[in-house]
Image (tube, rainbow, N blue to C red; front, side, top):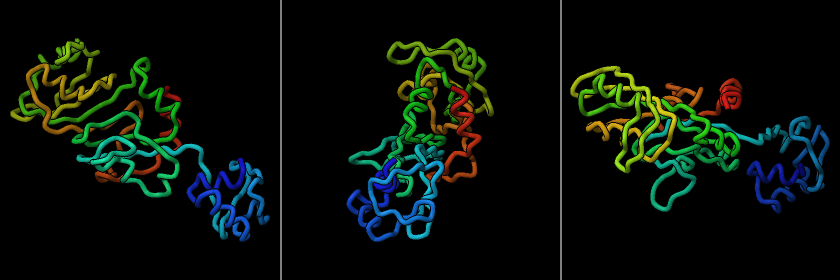
Length: 237
């Protein structure tokens, strides 16, 4: 990879600005000053420094966010704040995007990455990647609902969902539940409960495939995935 492309990709300026950094002798590769913008480097084996600071180059970035309500799962929007708007500049330069969507008022686990192949595999209907949600329902959820979800329910547009695993955590006027589904239809969890005459009043995604929400993350916070989490995601596909 050319040194100017590497530095520009990492957000250290435009190609023109990067060339000035090189001309000023601010960049070293393996302790040797590099001024030629066309110089090729191997990000995995060469040590690159800028003004004495080691530069880490990553092809892919994998972030786990605890998405807050009121923010949309998109890269840009004319009216609403997006999950990308919540990222630090040093993470934005990788041009990541949310994997799938969570409704504007839904909280919880959202994977953000620039790894298009992984995103495609996670979202592919053929892969049946399970997603688990915690929800509060405004009525009593019963064993009849559990059985209905096991068979699949008919949504308002006539679509019959694949089986879902419904667990009742607390039953009453307001019921706490966990629901695991392998599809990602628009507003699916809400529409599944509407199909049995009930309404979701709070919804939070807690897992996607082998990836579980880090409960230490406050709403709107995010962190990079650990090597173990990345390996789990990749190998699970």
